[in-house]
Image (cartoon, rainbow, N blue to C red; front, side, top):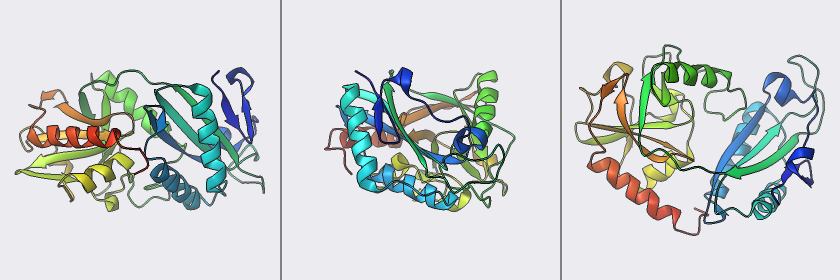
Length: 275
């Protein structure tokens, strides 16, 4: 029977509750990870939990110890009994006031899992006008403050796209709402460096480690079909997903480097998963 882990208890979904004063709910004061369950096992769990800890440290939120996190994940995955699923681990600052200040409360830990649908084979993207602040306090952290992403994704959908793409304040390509971006320019595979303000994506790192690629700034003005040969998105749930249109203009593909990255990532999924 599916279950949700909340602060040490494994509960039926209808009984899983947090306080209305939880700071994650009140002001988005929390961090999270989305983890792919593949062949019944969480994929790249060690990397995801390490990033959760880094994000929590960036927000100065205490996080449960690694053994507690791993046990909670195992309990929820076991209860779900799904071969392919989306697992979410959320840690918030716990109960707080109805404002930005914090109380000295223990953190809230929630782990939940649901069935994963079939991913789209490709994506159309739209560049939105709001920039990522690469120098902001939340740059590079995976926090629950996702209203900006929700707004950008709604704008992309209005323009017939599947994902929104952000530039940063310096006018460089940054990232998607929940994805990293790779492009092929002059035959070379590149992705924005972390200094551009993008999230240190787990799938991004795996592509860079197992597929020839480089971190390099790219002016957002050059993120267009007549200036690049190929492009793809990476994320936990997308895997490696070819981009087939930018701002309504068709991008041929997937090209050879994209196909190579897709194959390399697919091979990694069939390993033991703890990369």
